[in-house]
Image (cartoon, rainbow, N blue to C red):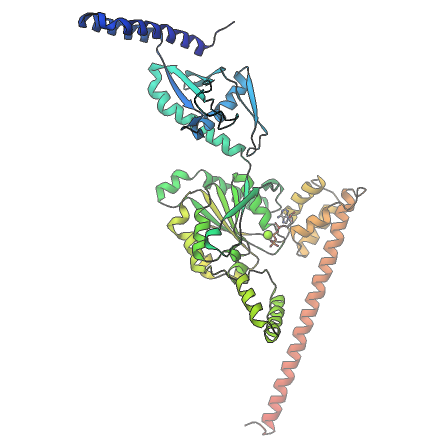
Length: 507
Ligand SMILES: Nc1ncnc2c1ncn2[C@@H]1O[C@H](COP(=O)(O)OP(=O)(O)OP(=O)(O)O)[C@@H](O)[C@H]1O
Ligand SMILES: [Mg+2]
């Protein structure tokens, strides 16, 4: 049987330890000179026998075994190596990871790693359970203490203790980040200041840039911007700017603003914090929520135009007017005060624009770093200029009606086709003549029954586009008629006024 390096090393160590023990036992019987002489040679012998250094990383610390983060990170780093090199592995199901099974070295296994041409050895070990400690079941509280041992030649001490260990920790962290399951955080509506917090669920939106329907150049520009941001740690530090980026996504409903946010989160591998401003009590609660967000995250405030009017409802003007009317009637009825109090309670948010701007610009907003803040709106013109002034938002992204290029992406997504000699040109022409959102195009392209083939779906889209075109034409005709009628009426009124002046009725 071939003996592992660690095993040989421990054999040598135990021989040396035995010699040291014998020496220590008889040390008192030797005169000082002899004692010094022995000591010198014993150290030399020790160095000669085992010129290796060991560093131990314990899996838990303290009496009640708090899991060590460093140990977990090193284990993650080694799991990528150990799966190829170790012979006995143990598998663990990790809930928070995308990879369902994490393989790591079994106890007493050993692997080697190479860094800048230097070979090091890692071994996994555990201490025997302590008889004096309470017996916990297996798991993080188990009283079996696990540890990883790193062994290397003493001439590489500097390289290993500084650069290599740092490399292991960085790589381990990067692998953890890459494999983790993304989370979607939402803020809980609460009346109490102390109860303002995030709750989360796993974020599993399938949106990707590849499936996002928009002009390829525009998409590429956004991707490049994100890549630059991700690699920008040193740059932001150098120019003295907080490492964050603000995007404003605007466009009509159904043009893919929310889909874009999901694609950004997936691309960046960031968690999403979906901030519902209308349920945030006041600026202080907002501050608390935001300082509670972690780095590597996208903070989203959807429909910012509606969020700050404090009604919290996404209403069209007409609906809003109706509601106000209803409320007036209600006030007159019995129990008016009760309802009013209830309504007030519901719309308690006192978050102000300046509070929000503080969040974007303020120093505390940068704690944690590496965050993208995204606002969305259907009506960019309705936004307060303070919110969208240059420098506050780093990028303005318009999500527009479906172009031919965008349609081609949807056709690939939904029907798996890239061209059609007859139907594609018809669709291209129609898309140039009418406004249809990607959401509506996608809906038409979706097969409605199992017998629907590509052609049926494309024809269904053509039909919808023709209907939309007719509708637009009809609306334009009605609008023109209305304008004509108004003009006619204005003309008549002017003529009557002139007549009155001429007849001396008006001087
Ligand atoms: N650009 C797009 N690319 C791919 N799919 C899209 C796109 N736009 C819309 N869709 C499809 O339409 C659906 C609705 O889109 P989404 O919710 O992203 O629109 P939105 O702009 O956020 O709308 P709203 O303003 O109402 O929130 C999505 O689930 C997606 O399937
Ligand atoms: Mg949306």
